[in-house]
Image 1 (cartoon, rainbow, N blue to C red):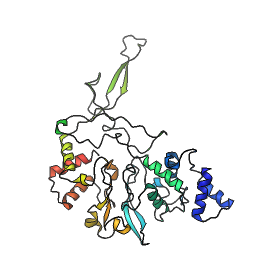
Image 2: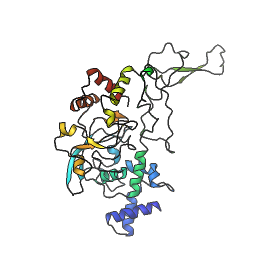
Image 3: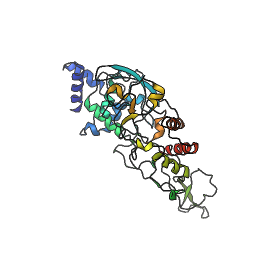
Image 4: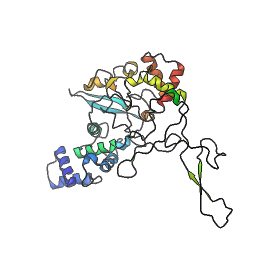
Length: 367
């Protein structure tokens, strides 16, 4: 039933009529991705994942340079970190082609409005634009059910609150030297193998304070995995120690004074929280990011071209999972976090000292 309804929508979109041959043709094109029976498209993450990776579901050229959503949005950060040509048409029918950076999809739930100029109010609208754009996926059709499923999949990629130990809470100086609390994983959707979350490996993720030195721990080098000693039933040799090493999460690194200073700068002198407001680290507005005035000239009118804001203004992105945003700005103009902080220090006349710059960068790296 769902498949037939989807094919009928595609037929109307293409103006192909209702011949049995046309319907069969469209059903074959969409056959690789089928809705989950009994599940609304807006909740069908499995269907959305299939469409996201499909190189044929929208009638696009499977050999094209941007044949699927996953061509640019891939890996655990769901971005290729690239800057690509996009074609935008405004309400007056004017068309422009500009360079825009591929955003990570990890913050899809909080990074609205969508597109760097805020021209897409919903994920569905953003997906439709990319699918049908002649310089992006160059698809020939897309159905509302497909867009809803794509949105469901992209929303499932956002790291939920509490999954990551950052951003840090607003802390007091008395907490200097303490360790980050253990963060319990948050249950995800019913399906297994949920993509899009940062991997738990490494000293930052799933760490926990350990009560004193564990047995056989004294000889371990810093940063290596500790072993937990568990007795096992005695073997043939009663004198055998019978120890079984069990890996456990490494201890959490301490919150350094420089990170706490950086947080205070973020909330105060640096004025970062004015736009990147906790807890989502965005105020979801269209504003100037200073890049237009310093680098772009008038080559990219941003929100001014599509009517979502003044000339040269762009969307305030969330800073959650900040490392996935490199290179930074709407056009990838700044490659490193150090450059971003120094750029705003000068363009906004913040008068941060060298130490304050370093402390702010240290804090931003925890986001």
